[in-house]
Image (cartoon, rainbow, N blue to C red; front, side, top):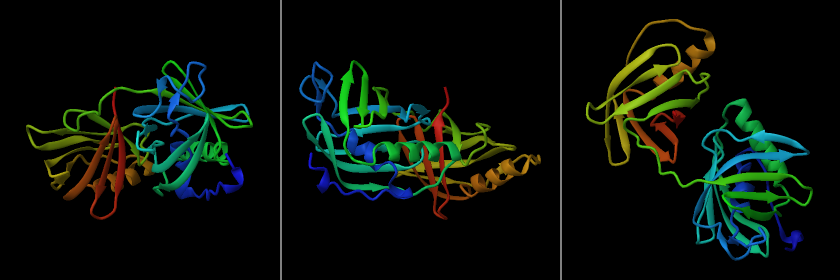
Length: 259
């Protein structure tokens, strides 16, 4: 690949772009190099982690890449979503037309995103498949590790969704009940219940009923953010085991399916 023609601008908004394009290889041959036998496209790959300068970083829950057969790749690294166009030159990957969201999440996921961006900054990786595993390697030996994931999306209703952003240390969770038309759970400190109706890709949530306990400031701040989801209409998206809720006032919350 002519690396002089590679142009990338890595900003906080696009830390994930290299991952998407790097996974855009077509197939992996019997030797493990991108080539002819085992499929890479049309597969959802969970990101296990990235190793930079000999230090391994574990990916946050929900990190994944789905590689389309149309030369597009998209997914999430646990915080930000991304998409890119990808082309293969032998066992090398070339990037173009990259986009990514700009959310700032908890300290650990953002640190992993930065490590991933540094690993993939030159836009040139070698893709190798071994069974259910995909490894992307830079010329300097840094790697991104992924595993084939064939599980279906979790159901919105009946799933206990553990809130990951804002961060409550795993103490906040929500469960939607389709038969009762409700949402209930815990905001980190206090319990919450409200009406919730799903229609046409949106959730209409009623005014919340909560308990009245006081907790440490960090939990109370997170609760204030979560309460902005109520008494209004939410857009939502379920992607495998990840849930995104976005209110009309711009509040965005992420969660993962428990268990």
